[in-house]
Length: 260
Image (cartoon, rainbow, N blue to C red; front, side, top):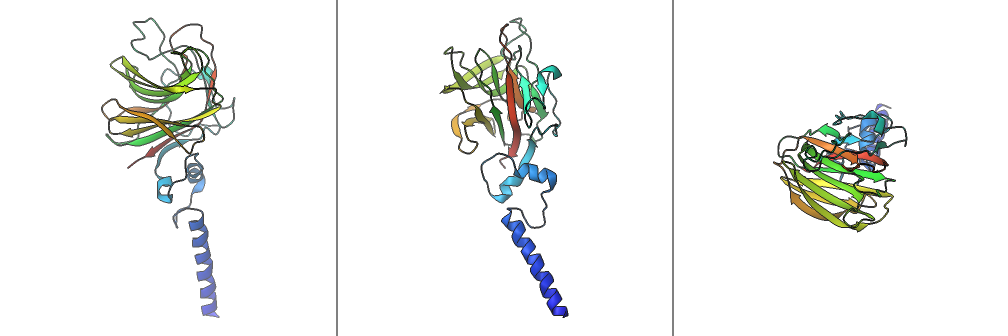
């Protein structure tokens, strides 16, 4: 009888290993609640080992799990309950473009940021998804922000196409010592959901977009900064001009992954 019992136990353990491997998890690692959230992140399918390279993930599921440190926080324009499962930032007047103080314009509020958790010169991929946001006036915008301070940042956003005066486009803005550079992409129209991605390679930043979260279009690569940004996160605002309507920008998630 004893050998039969040992054989049965061995078969049960083997079946458990098969189920774990079929689920795409290394044997001996339980996903748990946090692991399940990471595995559920809306990113393209990757090898098992790559799925565990998340440095930070925020699903905006009713409460904040990352240590967000908003710059010039204004809680009246931020919500986790207006649209369930999303961070809603209502745009308002404010800018970090150029020397806003010299232009007599207010500084942007609710720059939604975390401290960069990476060591100096480490590379990363930063992604978000924006839904039900249709910027219709200059300079309504929402997107990703790599930030040292108000005069030194890289911003990749979906915004009103102010150059054409209609429609929308994506634009990368690189600012160094309050001197901005602009790198707009081709025109787009009324996207109901869009993924934005910044990939850091040393001092270079590749900027890309997607409409399905799987296939990304790379629009270009530009150099900025010293390769060691201080803060990373999200931005939604109206810019400096007065009288621009406030609208809601909804972020589905924020994700930071290592490329090492």
